[in-house]
Structures are given as structure tokens and as C-alpha cells.
Length: 298
Image 1: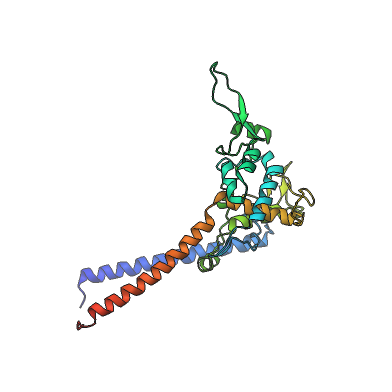
Image 2: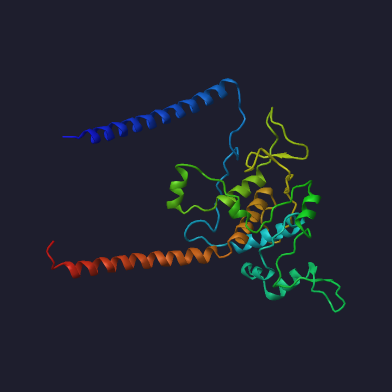
């Protein structure tokens, strides 16, 4: 039989639970009412960005056994060098890292020597430029962030080093749950590919700022300051790959993924070995426990 204090506690708990349920129901009702009202008013403005979810592309490095397509990464470097490097830096990648893309030491030295950067002060305290070395980071197009902003109407172009990991739109529930089991981690390259191939004319009623370009895949709005950077036939491929915007976008996206996570393949290989070890170790622990405790009555 409950005491007076116990009855009071139980009543208060019930009141609190009912209040919580009522509050949740009220908030849910207000949200639905707001959506209905917006729909009745013809408010078609998007409430989140990107407006369109990125397209899913088949990548060679996807999945637990994915590997880099070296030819694709080399084409991506070519696109970066001839198109993207005019505005975007790659300041967390060294020239010597290009050895991972199959380039020889001589090729890397020749590539780095095409760029110059300030040297150490000489005996007179003067600073002169010198050719870049393999140990140097990629030389950017601007000397500093202020110069980058001044050359681009106040908006400095983002660095490419980690962009494939930083620009990864959330896929929402329940998709991200399935991603855990499929090991999907390519939303960054998918986003970059979709953005580069997603420039279209703005729909009626959509205002695009002067100098901007409409793109429903942009993660921060409906338009961006960068004009379409790629066009068919812009880059010449020596290996016979299609010289199309679609192919260019795939190649530069894959290259940016490599720049952001160059040890991706090694990490996946190590992870697979660790999982095999853990499975074997768990089995040994089970049979050891079974043998030790088999004679003990429970």
C-alpha cells in the first residue's frame, strides 16, 4: 500500500509525463500548421541547402576494398594544374606526395620547378624567389588571403586540400544508418561532382546575385560566385579518356579526395586486417572460456 509521499510522487511524475507529451504534441502541431500555411501562401523557397541531394557516383576507391585509379588521379592533377590552380590553393599537399600518383622523382622535380616561392634572406637581407622543391607545399595562386579576397570580389576561393572531406552534406535519417553498413564515405566527392555538373538556369522567381551562378547542389545557398569552370574539350587527355564535363568532374573530384585523405586505401586495408584479427580473437576467447568453465556448475 502506497504512503502519502509515494502517492504524491507518483502523481507528480504522471503530471510531468503528461506535460511533456502535451508539449511535444503542441510543437508538432505548430510545425505542421506552419508548413501548411507556407504551402497555402505559395512559399516555394527551399528551407535547406543543398536544394538537390548530390548524385551518387561509382568510385574506384569506394567500399572496403576500394583502390585509387592512378590514371584518374593523374588526370585530376592535370585539371587542377590547368584550370583550378588559377584560383584555388592546395597548401597542405607537398610536391613529393605526387610519388603516390606514379610520378618519378625527376618528374616531380620538374613539375615543382615550374613554380617559385620566396627564399630565405640572403647575406644582404634581401629575399629573392627560388624554384619550388619536392619538399615544398604546392605554391598557391595568391601570396595571402587578403590578396585572394581582393582578386575575387571579397570572397577568397577555398583551399582544395581538405575540401572533399569538409564539403560532405548530411544524408539524413534513415540513409545514414544504411551508410554504416555499406561503408559509404564518398559524399564529399559526390558533392563536388554534382556541383561541377549541376549548373543550370535559375527557375522562374529565383533571384541570382550579380556575378553569381545558380546551382541547386551548392551547400551554402542557391547560387555561388564561381562560374562554371569546366566545358567540353577544355582539357586534352593523352590517354584517350572522354574530354567532357562529366569526365573532368569525376577526375578532379577523385583527385581532391586523394588530396584530403591520401592514405585512404592503406587505412581500409589495415581496417580489414584488424576486423579479421578481432573475429579470430573473439572466437579464441569464446572457446577458452567454454573450456575453463565447462566443469563448473552454474
